[in-house]
Image (cartoon, rainbow over all chains, first blue to last red; front, side, top):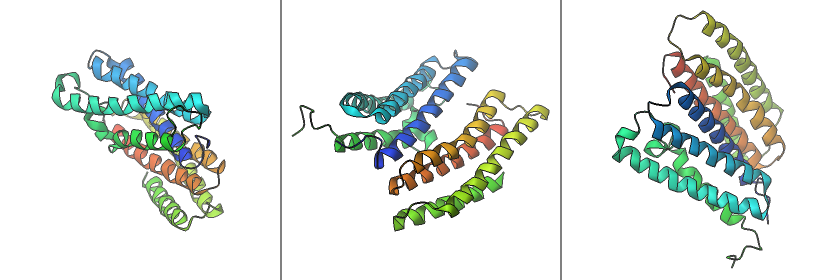
Length: 135
Length: 116
């Protein structure tokens, strides 16, 4: 099994790291400044931040266990960005302010929408040999 | 600080060429990034001074966090890239530089009065 943070993974770790910092910073500023304005949106920001942090950490650590956690994190990330993306168009009341995942990550050049696909593709390529579903 | 964007553009170009040729980043690229980083550090100090004296409606915490963040991106990217001198390592430099551009644009917007 290749190291999770080697080769293309190195780029991925950096991008995930940037998003982890960006999402954490943003959610803290938003929740600290006026949490009442958009509690749903801001809480989702914080959730996104946690997911990015977990993904970054797992990619850095490597190993079968971190690999599994990373798959979960990237899947949640993908589900989150799609779900929040749809919600932000349908239930506009919940999103008076933008968050990382609202409108499919429009404020971040739609990178949040693309990133989980790269993450999952990379994890597929680095699947540990001992993994039961490995064919 | 238009200088930041110009230096970032030069770095991005250089990285693109290196990626195409599959060459590791050399002294030249790191000098350009070093100059960019120096400008960013000057910007950090200037930004703090200006923020102190401004009458504008600038969100202080936000502005300072972006000032610091934009100055951190290149050093972290450079170290992360140097740990693996491959095409991927060079790509990291590109991503780091791109991050600087994005943060710099946001920084200007925040100075203009934009919120989080």
